[in-house]
Length: 532
Image (cartoon, rainbow, N blue to C red):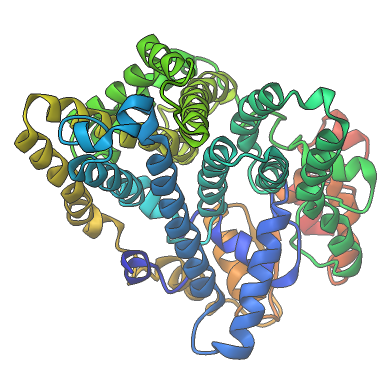
């Protein structure tokens, strides 16, 4: 409800205009193409044309992002609930003899049950109400869907631990991993460590049937990429990126070679920040901007420290010892699940640090530039989700430890934890409210309304391009105007797009500077383009 109340009724800046425009027309977005998101936008926009004509396509796509973000919040809470499993804290004897010990130990007591629920609910909602998550979970961007996939993979990891049959959970997890990679390439920084652990735990390489089913599921998840060349062949239109009609053009786009493969930025990054400084910037943003108060970062430390504590593994070994007095098999199975859950939590921590090191090692955007900092910051939602999962674990551990000192103290802390999302909501509502944000729509209209009939409009500014493209392609405003993106004309693949502009004469293959090798090889300058 909070997301829907604060969602913009139109495009909200960034890449949203372009992404919705390409979805409306089944075109190709900027690298790597985002095929799954394009399909989702097309379905949502088509639904709106038939059943919700009072709302703009952008607003309906914004609402879909609200749904993705809300489901992600629920999956974070469910994951934390599973990670705080009672068998992690109490041995077989405590579980079997709960009537004698539940007043002081084990998660069977009312306080411990309440703590398990409150920490799960609080961590999920606090993540959703953090400013960065809130901003992108209510706008037409790929990040809301990415957040959903990250949360889904973490939840699938918990199901792998608690379900006895690894085949359906491994296959479902592989499908999720494949789909995640069709939406955001940074998903690989979660997919890779988790997949390696699952393969190791299941001995998948020695089980051909399991390996085959999992591999097929993963390939099926990647299948949306096949629609990029199909859409380009069936629905070619001006304004789309890349040349999807050839294998080389398809892989060029898939590998983001226009920006630089495994990079965010194709410009000069001399003197750009290193891994350590970028990681410290992330930590500062998490503690001072995304959490209600920096001291709440202590829960993250508690969560990580308690999970990495070797004493927990020692407790689990006791659970796997010889059953006494005919302890039932289900208690032993519960202990085995708890052991897997501890290992899974450790994999979450490994994945968090793996992301921070690898992403910050590859990211080359200079953070001293406020615009580039904002672009870079969007990719911190991924590690933030993993951090909030561990914060939820730390919350529960803190209540458990506190209740050993005083039952009343534990109750008060658990209740305070449950109230934290209310504070986060109140603190961040005003800065996250985009319900009356029409700036980019009005900006595009103010430009289009002033242009003469049948104009050629040359654009070299992202926000002009994305907002105007959305208004023309999705809302049908000023279709008589031909809009051309000057920066897109500079790529070699532009030669394959020239036939889509039948009213324009291009004096060469692509736009470039004069007296250069590309110019000699067939490129054209801006003055040559105007003269033609």
